[in-house]
Image (cartoon, rainbow, N blue to C red; front, side):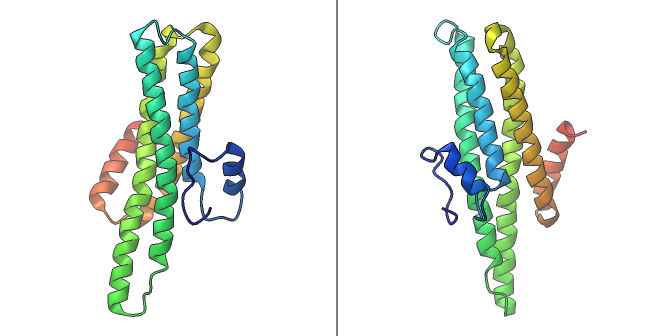
Length: 191
């Protein structure tokens, strides 16, 4: 299980959590952030289901957005595992000769771009989803507002976790254009 990403459509929560807490290389915190965002989106979807999903286009639209976010978040969880394993493989490349060093450096740099792009995309998805919750609140049945609050809290947690993964990778990022883009975007959300 540690040599390839989980199939998130087949693994149980208990199995995932057990491997997350083991000495396996993956999954890790970045993957867990994607799982948390998927839980957030599905929690909000639950609120939509019981708030007139078949009666109101706005409720149906919100539900569809939740389910889309949930699927994308799980894909990002798997992507996080893949990118970490690719980085690990790149770091294991030989570096005895100048040619090997050049190949290894290029592979590591490329892997770092992917390692930072996944949490960056997760952070953007988390904030976009979190912002979609409040406009739905007036349409939500009152006994389901706590589900929206849980969704909002989980989306915030996924965002913060994604930022932690960005921060840990940023010192290794050589792509200055991407670095500026991420820093500018984060400047809008992180005070």
